Length: 442
Image (cartoon, rainbow, N blue to C red; front, side, top):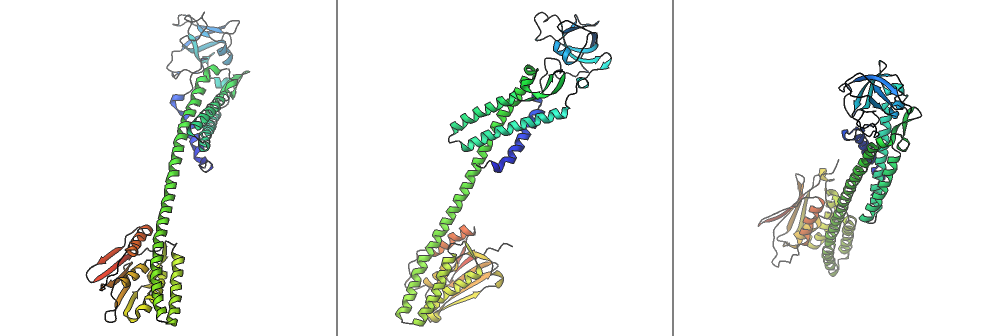
């Protein structure tokens, strides 16, 4: 499995997960206990109260107001410090039910939620602090969780590729991924308030740690689970693709092996027939014709050697080979065997499996009576892009046994190479084989 070749999709997935996690309504930052948020309640819809702030020595305070509240509103020291409130400030505010307050105040006072106005002016924390823009904060969040997601993907994918066993991979990857996630939580970017300045800092440096912990933890664990699931699916897809490629390779090798075996069947059959013809010339002591026969025989064997491993050849080359092969039979049968070859030159570059004509010519000679009174005439022609080899039926008195190798070989090779089947037309008077040619690619 090559990780580098697919690194771009992993980066895209990591970025997409980061966008999802930061835009998801399920992971909207949880309201802090300090009243910086309003838990999704529209501030315009909340009940507003007005009062004057009084501070104690330890800097927490109470807002005393002439309103429907039964008691004054409690203000934490953190709120006083963060919102830079001062004693005597007239505040328009909203409240929340008391929670997580000291025992002495629980049940006694409602708690300040948000300050809407201070001393008659609209109150906004962004106006108080020179804090980073929301866009900068958003970019930090997106970039950080995208990097975390990519690191987790690398862990799961790379370790899966190198693991010797599934159990070992699971143990190693889970331990390492959890460790990386824990470190990521510790260094997660959050808004921190320190020394009177609001800035983007790390989770470990945040005074709001207890309040932002759930947000950071949720995002990080979500990223861990989703990237683990994505990596698992990605690994399964890679394995499936590998199996498909391997199957295609085996299929190709199987076809090549079958083709080579089929071509190999031609050579012994042709070789023995050729030796018989040559032996006849030697017995007749016709040295001139024997030498010419050897030349033509040499050409035919050279063609077989050169094209035996080739799947296809051009019609022009196949016809040239057929003419040399036909010559070998003409030497044997003298003026009793004739071949009518009618090939339009426009089909010269059309293709067919190599050595297609040899078994058909050989079978025509083998299975028909050839005499001076009854010569054999074989026709080789093209009709509408189909090569036709036709001969009349002239049965011999002594029928030679047929193995069926030649014709079956030709049928099999056409199915392997051309993906088509040859057509055999036969009746009482003639025998014809039609071979559909392959038009060359332009």
